[in-house]
Amino acid sequence: MIAMSAAHIAAVTAGTVHGNADTIVNGTVHTDSRLVTPGDVFVALPGEVTDGHRFIDAAIAAGAALVIAERESTLSVPLVVVANGVIALSDLAREVVARVRALGTLRVVAVTGSNGKTTTKNMLRAVLERHGETVAPRGSFNNEVGAPISMLGVTETTAFLVVEMGADGVGDISKLVSVVMPDVAIVLTVGLAHIGKFGSIEQTAIAKGELVIDLPPTATAVLNRDDPRVSAMPTSAGVTWFGLGDGRTPDESTLLADDVRLTLDGTEFDVLHGDRRYPVRLRILGEHHALNAVATLAAALALGIDLPAAIAALEAMDRAERWRMELLAAPGGVTIINDAYNASPDSTAAALRSLASLTRGRARAIAVLGEMAELGELSGEEHDRIGLQV
Image (spheres, rainbow, N blue to C red):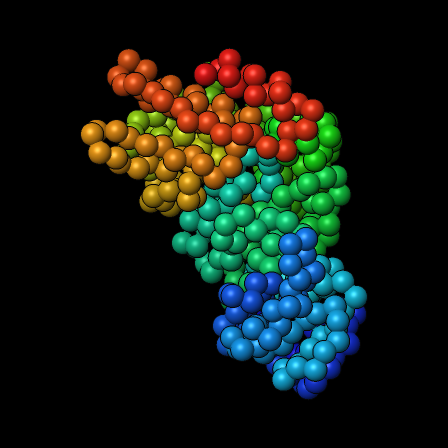
């Protein structure tokens, strides 16, 4: 985080300082006391399982230089007491990003979608960090707590901020966009992941569309032209399209993944942009990752990065994310594809298609499937559909 005084943090978060208001902090912001190192800021949040206020002493023992909490207490470091810790996080992130952005060098990229957010975020990091200091969350820090914590990682020298934006319902992404307006916003898919929380696919589309609906004309929306719910999203921004090749020559505003081929060495395809064709050889397995890759390349193009350089960065990646289509060797000539991070109907179907493509006519294929959660009333129907696909 950029350097700020306890007094300034209190002013930004509508809080009250207890202790030395002139104390300056510029460490990392954490809500997990186990991650705190000397000079960091600890934010104590009440939670469903435990209460962060119980771990304030542990955070200070680990070196926290300032604590933000919802309750007063006597501490050896400055304490900023706020009415709501989650709102305070967003307010602080808004201030920090605005101050860095005022320097004129920071570009913000946001990504959402029912599937592929974390992989695409990792791809964006791989591309952008070759062109400047890049801040992007580790893991799936994409909610009202995780996203602001990621934003608070920017400094005066940060060139790119990548924000993953998830949602459990309508309004969640709008709140995150109000904290930081993206220069480039990617919407990957509208699918059935977490539909039990949204209630319907239409509500999911509204929630995901919040990322682009209020973008200014100077921004770029990167939209999946193959998903009718994504391609229909209203926006005032300029639009760059991505998708899979369909035999037609795309225009300059469209990037397509054509002739996708899977092997146990990775995923190969050609990127079509206008009348040009660029070969790509990912070390990442899965047809669906070709779509994530062209979305990433479209965003890179919008940021002024040339395609060959961006492709080279993607080709150097050795995995999408831990437990996502990871190749593992086992005794007896068995190959294991570990895709156990989570499961939705769309991601499970994509994994099954990849397995079938890799093994058809060459090897036995065994799929070990677990439950797909958070599907609400569609749970039975969607499990049946996957069973039929198997």
